[in-house]
Amino acid sequence: MQFAIRVSRIKYNLMKKHNGMRPQDVVILLKIATLKDKVWNGKNLYTTLFISPSEVSESLNRSMIAGLLDAGKRKLMRQAFLEFLEHGLKYVYPQQPGALVRGMPTAHSAPPLNKIIQSQEFYVWPDPLGEQRGQAIEPLHPGVVEAARLDAELYELLSLIDALRIGRSREQAIAIQELSNRIG
Image (cartoon, rainbow, N blue to C red; front, top):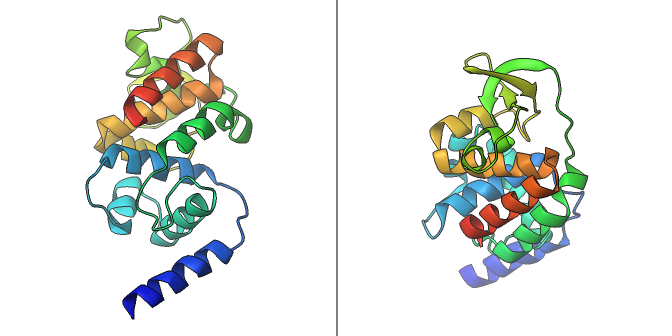
Protein backbone atom coordinates (compact mmCIF):
# COMPACT_ATOMS: atom_id res chain seq x y z
CA MET A 1 0.00 0.00 0.00
CA GLN A 2 2.77 2.47 0.90
CA PHE A 3 4.53 1.72 -2.38
CA ALA A 4 1.35 2.58 -4.33
CA ILE A 5 1.00 5.87 -2.44
CA ARG A 6 4.65 6.71 -3.11
CA VAL A 7 4.27 5.93 -6.84
CA SER A 8 1.15 8.14 -6.94
CA ARG A 9 3.05 11.01 -5.35
CA ILE A 10 5.93 10.66 -7.80
CA LYS A 11 3.51 10.60 -10.77
CA TYR A 12 1.73 13.68 -9.38
CA ASN A 13 5.03 15.54 -8.95
CA LEU A 14 6.07 14.63 -12.49
CA MET A 15 2.78 15.98 -13.83
CA LYS A 16 3.22 19.33 -12.10
CA LYS A 17 4.08 22.16 -14.41
CA HIS A 18 7.64 23.45 -14.27
CA ASN A 19 7.59 27.25 -14.33
CA GLY A 20 11.35 27.68 -14.37
CA MET A 21 14.07 27.52 -11.78
CA ARG A 22 14.39 30.21 -9.14
CA PRO A 23 17.57 31.54 -7.50
CA GLN A 24 16.83 29.87 -4.17
CA ASP A 25 16.80 26.52 -6.01
CA VAL A 26 20.54 26.88 -6.61
CA VAL A 27 21.13 27.72 -2.93
CA ILE A 28 19.14 24.67 -1.82
CA LEU A 29 20.95 22.36 -4.24
CA LEU A 30 24.32 23.69 -3.05
CA LYS A 31 23.32 22.95 0.54
CA ILE A 32 22.32 19.41 -0.44
CA ALA A 33 25.73 19.04 -2.13
CA THR A 34 27.45 19.96 1.15
CA LEU A 35 25.50 17.26 2.99
CA LYS A 36 27.00 14.57 0.75
CA ASP A 37 25.55 11.21 1.90
CA LYS A 38 24.12 12.44 5.19
CA VAL A 39 20.42 11.93 5.82
CA TRP A 40 18.55 15.23 5.55
CA ASN A 41 14.99 16.54 5.46
CA GLY A 42 13.24 19.76 4.56
CA LYS A 43 13.61 21.08 8.10
CA ASN A 44 17.41 20.78 7.85
CA LEU A 45 17.23 22.93 4.73
CA TYR A 46 14.82 25.66 5.75
CA THR A 47 16.33 26.20 9.20
CA THR A 48 19.90 26.52 7.90
CA LEU A 49 19.12 28.45 4.71
CA PHE A 50 16.51 30.89 6.06
CA ILE A 51 14.10 29.87 3.32
CA SER A 52 10.46 29.12 4.18
CA PRO A 53 9.30 25.49 4.34
CA SER A 54 6.90 25.97 1.42
CA GLU A 55 9.66 27.51 -0.73
CA VAL A 56 11.94 24.55 0.07
CA SER A 57 9.21 22.08 -0.87
CA GLU A 58 8.43 23.83 -4.15
CA SER A 59 12.15 24.15 -4.90
CA LEU A 60 12.69 20.42 -4.45
CA ASN A 61 9.80 19.77 -6.85
CA ARG A 62 11.20 22.15 -9.48
CA SER A 63 14.67 20.64 -9.16
CA MET A 64 13.29 17.12 -9.52
CA ILE A 65 11.28 18.06 -12.61
CA ALA A 66 14.38 19.77 -14.09
CA GLY A 67 16.43 16.60 -13.56
CA LEU A 68 18.69 18.09 -10.89
CA LEU A 69 17.31 15.79 -8.16
CA ASP A 70 16.25 12.14 -8.48
CA ALA A 71 12.55 11.14 -8.48
CA GLY A 72 12.63 10.69 -4.70
CA LYS A 73 13.97 14.25 -4.29
CA ARG A 74 16.83 12.97 -2.13
CA LYS A 75 19.80 12.52 -4.44
CA LEU A 76 21.51 15.40 -6.20
CA MET A 77 22.19 14.67 -9.87
CA ARG A 78 25.69 16.07 -9.59
CA GLN A 79 26.73 16.02 -13.24
CA ALA A 80 23.51 17.67 -14.42
CA PHE A 81 23.81 20.30 -11.70
CA LEU A 82 27.41 21.08 -12.66
CA GLU A 83 26.38 21.40 -16.33
CA PHE A 84 23.64 23.83 -15.35
CA LEU A 85 26.05 25.88 -13.26
CA GLU A 86 28.71 25.99 -15.96
CA HIS A 87 26.53 26.67 -18.97
CA GLY A 88 23.38 28.33 -17.68
CA LEU A 89 23.84 30.12 -14.39
CA LYS A 90 25.38 33.36 -15.67
CA TYR A 91 22.58 33.70 -18.23
CA VAL A 92 19.70 32.83 -15.92
CA TYR A 93 20.91 34.82 -12.88
CA PRO A 94 23.23 37.52 -14.24
CA GLN A 95 24.69 40.10 -11.91
CA GLN A 96 26.43 43.42 -12.31
CA PRO A 97 28.54 44.82 -9.47
CA GLY A 98 26.85 47.74 -7.75
CA ALA A 99 27.77 50.59 -5.42
CA LEU A 100 30.47 50.43 -2.76
CA VAL A 101 28.96 49.00 0.42
CA ARG A 102 29.94 47.24 3.61
CA GLY A 103 29.40 43.50 3.49
CA MET A 104 30.59 39.91 3.38
CA PRO A 105 33.17 39.04 0.68
CA THR A 106 32.05 36.94 -2.30
CA ALA A 107 33.25 35.75 -5.72
CA HIS A 108 37.05 36.01 -6.04
CA SER A 109 37.18 38.21 -2.91
CA ALA A 110 36.22 35.25 -0.70
CA PRO A 111 37.59 31.76 -0.06
CA PRO A 112 38.66 29.71 -1.91
CA LEU A 113 39.36 32.02 -4.88
CA ASN A 114 40.95 34.82 -2.83
CA LYS A 115 43.93 32.48 -2.30
CA ILE A 116 44.27 31.93 -6.07
CA ILE A 117 43.24 35.23 -7.68
CA GLN A 118 44.70 38.61 -6.75
CA SER A 119 42.53 41.55 -7.80
CA GLN A 120 42.04 45.23 -7.10
CA GLU A 121 38.28 44.71 -7.37
CA PHE A 122 36.53 43.64 -4.18
CA TYR A 123 33.00 42.21 -4.16
CA VAL A 124 30.64 41.79 -1.19
CA TRP A 125 27.11 40.78 -0.37
CA PRO A 126 25.59 43.84 1.33
CA ASP A 127 25.52 43.24 5.07
CA PRO A 128 25.50 45.83 7.87
CA LEU A 129 27.57 43.43 10.02
CA GLY A 130 30.17 43.00 7.27
CA GLU A 131 33.73 44.09 7.88
CA GLN A 132 34.78 44.68 4.26
CA ARG A 133 33.90 47.35 1.74
CA GLY A 134 33.42 46.46 -1.88
CA GLN A 135 31.09 46.55 -4.83
CA ALA A 136 27.68 45.12 -3.99
CA ILE A 137 26.69 41.77 -5.45
CA GLU A 138 23.05 40.80 -5.01
CA PRO A 139 22.99 37.33 -3.42
CA LEU A 140 20.83 34.61 -4.97
CA HIS A 141 18.53 34.73 -1.93
CA PRO A 142 18.20 37.15 1.00
CA GLY A 143 19.10 34.40 3.49
CA VAL A 144 22.47 33.67 1.86
CA VAL A 145 24.56 35.86 4.18
CA GLU A 146 23.14 34.26 7.33
CA ALA A 147 23.42 30.77 5.86
CA ALA A 148 27.04 31.41 4.86
CA ARG A 149 27.85 32.49 8.42
CA LEU A 150 26.62 29.11 9.68
CA ASP A 151 28.30 26.90 7.08
CA ALA A 152 31.82 27.60 5.75
CA GLU A 153 31.55 24.94 3.04
CA LEU A 154 28.30 26.42 1.74
CA TYR A 155 29.88 29.89 1.88
CA GLU A 156 32.70 28.76 -0.41
CA LEU A 157 30.26 27.20 -2.88
CA LEU A 158 28.11 30.34 -2.94
CA SER A 159 31.21 32.47 -3.53
CA LEU A 160 32.22 30.22 -6.42
CA ILE A 161 28.72 30.64 -7.86
CA ASP A 162 29.13 34.42 -7.75
CA ALA A 163 32.46 34.07 -9.57
CA LEU A 164 30.50 32.36 -12.36
CA ARG A 165 27.89 35.13 -12.34
CA ILE A 166 30.29 38.11 -12.49
CA GLY A 167 33.77 36.79 -13.24
CA ARG A 168 35.84 36.99 -16.35
CA SER A 169 36.73 33.85 -18.33
CA ARG A 170 39.74 32.99 -16.13
CA GLU A 171 37.79 33.36 -12.88
CA GLN A 172 34.90 31.35 -14.30
CA ALA A 173 37.22 28.53 -15.41
CA ILE A 174 38.84 28.33 -11.98
CA ALA A 175 35.42 28.47 -10.28
CA ILE A 176 34.10 25.62 -12.44
CA GLN A 177 37.15 23.51 -11.60
CA GLU A 178 36.69 24.20 -7.89
CA LEU A 179 32.96 23.41 -8.09
CA SER A 180 33.70 20.16 -9.94
CA ASN A 181 36.19 19.15 -7.25
CA ARG A 182 33.70 19.88 -4.48
CA ILE A 183 30.41 18.74 -6.03
CA GLY A 184 31.34 16.26 -8.76
